[in-house]
Image 1 (cartoon, rainbow, N blue to C red):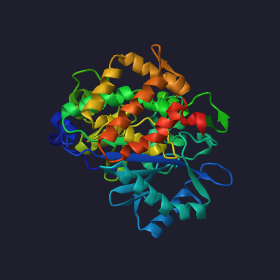
Image 2 (cartoon, one colour; image 1 turned 60 degrees about the vertical axis):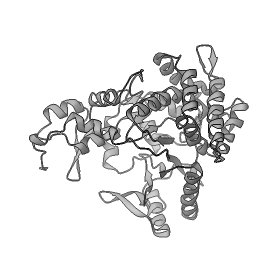
Image 3 (cartoon, helix red, strand yellow; image 1 turned 180 degrees about the vertical axis):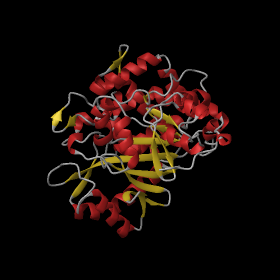
Image 4 (cartoon, helix red, strand yellow; image 1 turned 45 degrees about the horizontal axis):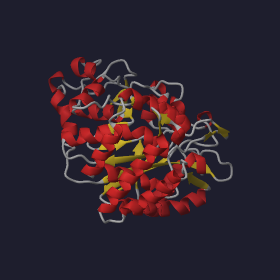
Length: 420
């Protein structure tokens, strides 16, 4: 098939890549939340399939009719729903993700999640499906989970390397938080702090001990799956050193191999044959880079903390029981308070990149029982939660209450994998 080629004189400029991040600077202080859960068949506890009379596709169709959502389509397949700025989408193993419009207050995020859950509840009951708050499917492995019929997922599954990449794609569910930045300096400060916090947050919310009915020996098997998936595009995006800027992140992305591009509604498989930098400089088989290619490439990059027109903090297992709202509360309390952010920086900046990176491997297995140098991770996690709590308390909006379930759990020295 012949696709329209981009003319060489329309080549993408380096400044346009930077603009995508520069234009993200804003004065707002909102929090976004993406909340993934695993759909299980109530009777068998197996992951619900996409197809079939009582599959997830029909569940989405019924929800759209009952609650006035619009379809999100990939070719002819329903892969999600949208209503204004909220979406319900499907991950590769049919994990159901709620993406909530960023809000100034966490109570408004909670309200919207509860509204969507209330709309889903009767349809889930009719279909005999429950949504569970776990980081990994506890009863079914990827060998028994069919890949969602979405074109990009087939290309990703074929390309992503690593011994647990299939686990990551089909079995895992997490919670991600988005925060705003006001300038390049503010973005880089928050980006660095988020990367330093990340392994401690992974420990706090570790909730994937069981997989396929078996105790894995890891508190967060989900974190282990990410550690064993394509380290060219996963892990830490940079060494988040002092003085870094948007160019450092852009240059890292430029050196990352490409998976595919879109042309005229079709995918063109690149399968890692060239980096984005090479694509910009020379094109590929008559195709030349566009800003949409760059946006797609950026979206197919999966670091612990991802820079977009906001900062996306990614590596938390899915949790429930009120803990889910402590995640945005933790970051709001730290990131939007200069005093709290400085306190966290002073506490964590003494650790080197290599120490923080190594900790990712240890917390996957031991969670709060891990140590960095000779300091228990648990004690640092308690301090992070307390900093965020008192920061939110000074805001006089009663948002510190969202951190109480986390603080109570940490007082017991436990993470979700130890309790549920």
